[in-house]
Length: 228
Image (tube, rainbow, N blue to C red; front, side, top):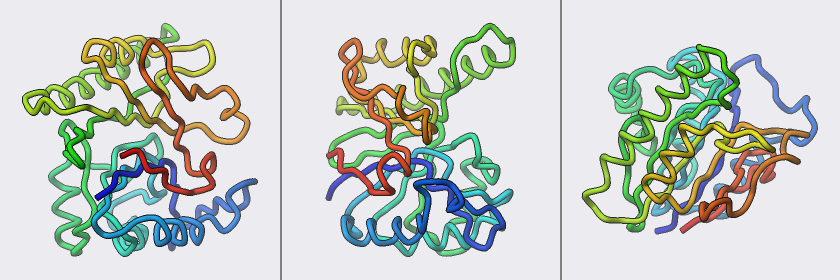
């Protein structure tokens, strides 16, 4: 049983939101299918780090969810800024159950254990630039991350954190998020959101004893990476 990660699939099956018009996104849905089938088995788990599909509702997103459910491996999904279908965890899990999407799971104020690793995370937010709305959102996301982490501390297992937004980008930081990572001595943090030219300023490697890695779909050529 192995643990993989990938972000920003931006699936648009039966949705008029083509992504393959962008460089690096050509035939990306087939790449996702091919790479999942090549690398994963049904005993494996993959964390999908936000912006999973373009649907505006759970119902509109159903074809994309069915596509994911039919791929190998259990999927743990967290929220991205373009996941407009996102609802409460209860509603989403009930929807998955109703449609027999039994390989899809939601990460939201909770945790999962895979291969003796606690999987925690939240969407995050971009940088404290002084705007009240951003500060409010960052505080909320930091609280959600802390709830997720605290919920599994009793297990005493290593914790991997997954965020859609990068907590560090170029010379900018989201200090509330970083403070949580440092408070709980998190060693690994995986994030998405960045695309194209923005990838050049992504942080990949150790900063203050925390290992960061960008896992956006186009950055990895839609290839899940094994992290455990």
